[in-house]
Image (cartoon, rainbow, N blue to C red; front, top):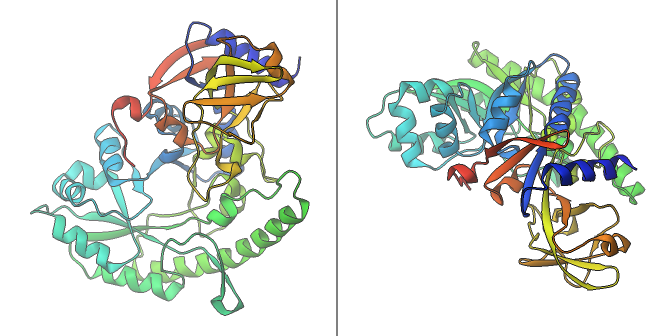
Length: 400
């Protein structure tokens, strides 16, 4: 029996009492992935990206481990909810236009001390000030640096379109603007190098593309390490008490941690290890989050149909954004239908051994987005479900 076949047998036994669709997290794999992230971080704390987990119980589990500290959230409403739930260090990773949320933040000492908001433009401060509604708490602010690699005099750009702040002078100027403004305090810098941390460099069957990605990423790491250090020096000249410099992501943990200027690493997808994180030379993790769909039809030889399964991930549309049939091994989509809204045909010889009601296990393309489809995660240890915990959705929270 192959390791994957053994996993399938375990998962089927663990969930035999549960009807599919069902989602699980293999706790042995989850914990092993967490330990590997800590090893790669080389002693620097890891801030957990909540968007890649979307389950309070699992956020609490990983934050209880040595080597993890703080949450990186994705909306202001989520940040406030987590802070009210007892999370004491929440960094909002994206600018917000949530006026009601800002009013709550500025009026509550507990929230204001626990939540740090992200900015890259003075206009965001104007919006926040206008939303205070009398709240006078000092708002903690993090400045975001654009990490993109610019070539040929800026005519070629590699990296996500995030912050407009690219140079040390631009970031330092915004730090001065915040320092001059009552009611705000700069406490951190964030720089997420998604073109390094979130792009696989070993895509199966595409050796030339993979080599090109590795060359690009090596150049990007060198350029960013030098520029990020200069940014930190420039900002510390304005804000000597800067508390943290956050960088990286699952695919770049050890590279980012090697920079002296960086004080903490962000990571989250590496806990679940969805399919988009199979294509890296820098690490290999264990798939920990899966979902199962039930076989409901057997339309012919070498074919079964499962209920639902059309759960595409965000990003540029493409086949890599679809879940992948994982267990039993050897199933594939019908190219004429793909992953369907209500039913999904699957082809391959393993289909002939599947019966009506059997489970087919899938891996989502991205990490936390799986939790937007399920109310609960069943936590598996060995061949037993030892706990069932709500996702954000299961707690009635759909932040985006």
